[in-house]
Length: 228
Image (cartoon, rainbow, N blue to C red; front, side):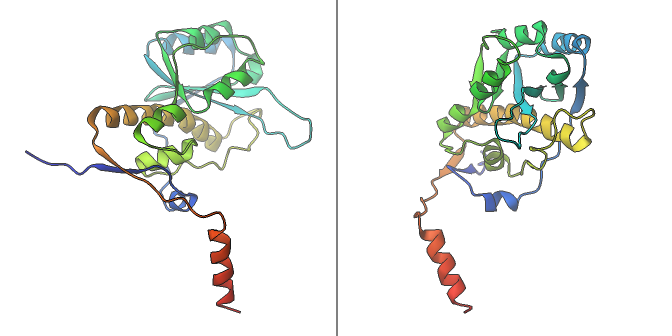
């Protein structure tokens, strides 16, 4: 009988730990959808899959009172991600039907917020939704961000450098495409890993002690005083 080491996960990890990790690289296919006709074709393909990763991107607002509708809807399988440029053609009926289909699971982070923003394009009732923030709690992970959860489970950093870029640009840059695809694709990978760990129990959870509120400040003062 061969004994394997259990996977070590923490209830929470720090930004410093993440910064030391290598960046994840997206290796799948990316398809940019600019028209309703392309969207219809893509949805027909996506309807074959029982599980899809979902995410959205919105053009950032830098002025008080300024807001924008969701510019991009990312829908991923394990090997491919479709980038639906909603600001060009809106939320089409086939896309709405995809979100409402009960036989296809939609997995993501803070999907309630994403769907609330998508409702500005059209009303719909999403069905068979899996919220990763709730799912990871079942194995003891308290972190809620995609970056921290993915780093905790896989040891790779998801770069957020494109988050505040213009998602309504005429053409999406390659870095934008990869950023958007990774955010949806990573949700599927997290789901698979958590379900595997739940089924096997082959992991060890480390509880990180809570830091005292003033601990970091006091330590900084001590360190500075050493050089004065």
